Image 1 (tube, rainbow, N blue to C red):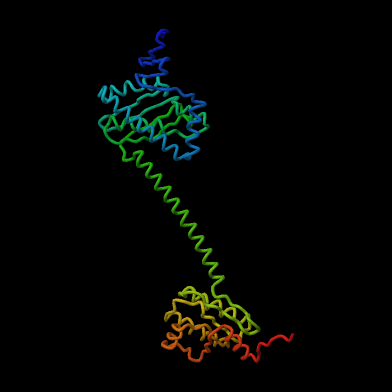
Image 2 (cartoon, rainbow, N blue to C red; image 1 turned 120 degrees about the vertical axis):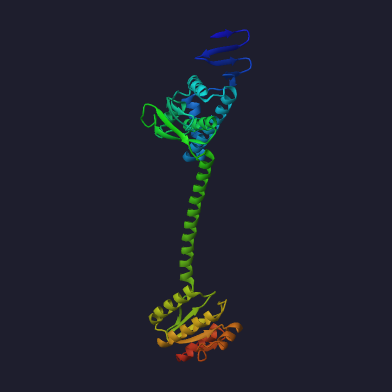
Amino acid sequence: MNNELTTGRYTNDVNGSQFEWDLNEGTFTFQGDDVMLFWINTAFKVFLDTIEEISGDEEARLVLETAGYRTGENVSEFYHESMGGIEEILSILPNTYLTAGWGVTTIQSLSEAEHTAIVRVRNSWEYKINNVQGKRTEGTFIPGHWAGVFSGLFGQSVWYRVVKSQIEGDEYSEYVFSPSSITPKKNILSMINEKDRHEIVKLENKVSERTEDLQNLIKELSSPIIPVLDNIVVIPLVGRFNEERSEELMTKTLSQLPTYQAHTLILDLTGIYGVDDYTIELMNNLVGACRLLGVNTIFVGVSPKLSILMVQSKAELENTVCLSTLQHGIHYALAQEGLHITEKNK
């Protein structure tokens, strides 16, 4: 090592790679570019742990893979401009990575014609980090980085396949590179689409559950049978009736009327809206079905529009008693039972 105490500059050549420290300027360079050092077991581990904690494991793996790919593209671009030949570049890179602390890298095979390659890496910084983190899955930065290198050198998109993994127990990691339509950008879009699809499914399930709860609640609250006195019940019809609600009203009414031993059913139509021919048909069917059970039906709260439709329809509702209010309907029903309401003597 050549120490120049007067200038505060120190240089060192390690296997052909140049390191230089300038203590006055506070700089450290490797092959002429600024670099910095991380302690793998502490600082760098905390750095990556924090990324994973904030973004999630899968997202962090994709971030590292994409970062590796892009730095690989930068490396290939730099060496293409300064050297040119692929074989010459690949003969230098393993030594550069070795002296930079990236582990022992070996180019096992290379085919410029087929745009394929096999790379072995042992004791990479990523392996060391993953080992300290207690992981047992191959990292994504190093293979992603070499995919970026080969994509730049070959001039077409290249992706990797892990065939051996040091973190999983092999002596070294081995990656096979070949032409592919896969890119980090497509991986990101795929992940985003998958997350969006997952969120949509979750939302659809939540909406479905909520809808079912609301439908059950509506069923419980819709058209309840209210016993007024012995043999007299009231059903308020609220809202618009479709086929499903109509069928449920018919089933619920006809099954529960015998339970109440009803002689008279008062249908309160005050809250009904969206009256159409379908509604008239429902009322007609309900009156007819109740008549078969020996139950008389009274309509109360009939609106002008409903009364017009009832007159114009061919439904057999002419003999059905219609009164203006629920109070009138109850008094009428009581009279049919031979009862009436009187004030309590004070």
